[in-house]
Image 1 (spheres, rainbow, N blue to C red):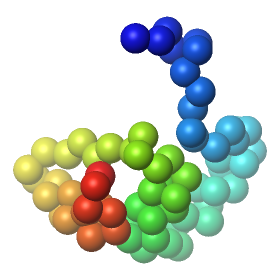
Image 2 (image 1 turned 45 degrees about the vertical axis):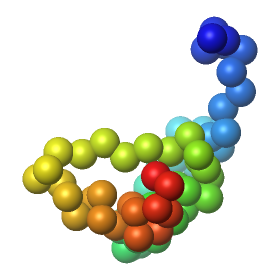
Image 3 (image 1 turned 180 degrees about the vertical axis):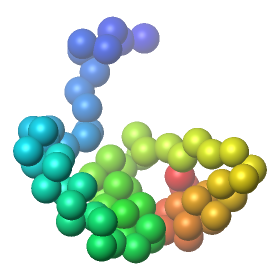
Image 4 (image 1 turned 60 degrees about the horizontal axis):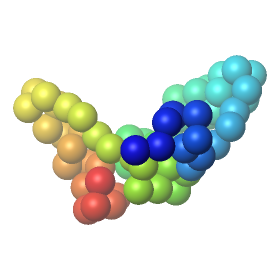
Length: 68
């Protein structure tokens, strides 16, 4: 298994300012739009972890991408 330093991330490299701006923009997005952005930017590296109390999160995620 490669060490973490040799694995290239598929995640976008964003500065703290860019993350703050993205967070502000996402405040108005639907949950489906946020999951779609995540799938587009993280691809197959994205996973969803939730408790059964959060079943809606899982439902939204698989409606965007059944392979999550």
